[in-house]
Image (cartoon, rainbow, N blue to C red; front, side):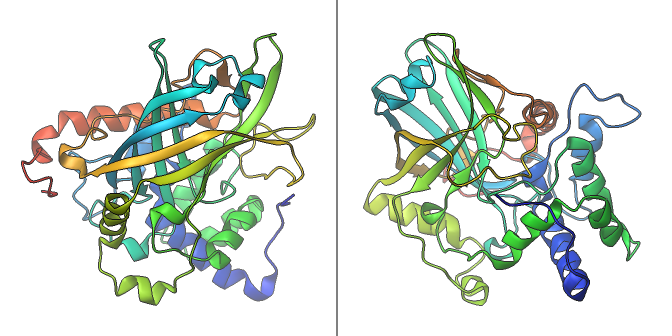
Length: 352
């Protein structure tokens, strides 16, 4: 299990610079704030305001994960998930899926090779009228342990004080695990080669009423191929969208949904802490992406991937982030829909 630790002094400066760059480029991946915080401490408005970078036109766009592309497909449940949850989505069968590949940046025109964190929004619908919405990212851990700490991280990363990040890291050593991933994990040239993780913990309730604390991941069928960042930059600013469009046009792409079940005592309220690798896992089905559509005219454009929209049989845990994200997402949704004229739909699907 990854344990938080203080970065050694010999590489602390480089480590903190890296963290500042990652947070500055992809803070939108972590736009989490709880609606129940007092206005004096933290509000959704404050977080969303903090995610609006100077000089970047965000009108009409999501304030987090602003650059993305839509997909449609199916989730085929194999029935194994029914041992963990009574939700219909785990009953053997196929269910329509809609989602969005995205980059964790508030800049809708960011070059793909400059954004470290990649995201995946998903909505699965079932015949009983319920939905399961989720928002996942590719890091294996979250950088901090509480919504307030994340807001403090945003402030530190944008501060003019050269010691701000060093001070923050000293107070929040858990950030070292995320920083290690950002610095050493290989980049790929395709969304189809990424593993996307819920990070947050949820509670599955089975048919007998027993509860199971879980996290889940989407594991790609495509083999990840590491690519140097310098080579990615040569592929153009929008290579990820073009690559996934071409790949899915050639053949549908698949991910296995793997649910990890916590043992008693595993941290469920802190997504900055990984669970041990020996925890029980259950393959509950396969997500198949069948079609890609540009976002301006695509079906995901107006979907809010609120992780608290859950079917019966799944509920939030003591992890504070889903409720926090829900509040920030709602505020972002309100703003961008009020600005629809600034991001009109097009007949060609091209971005305005």
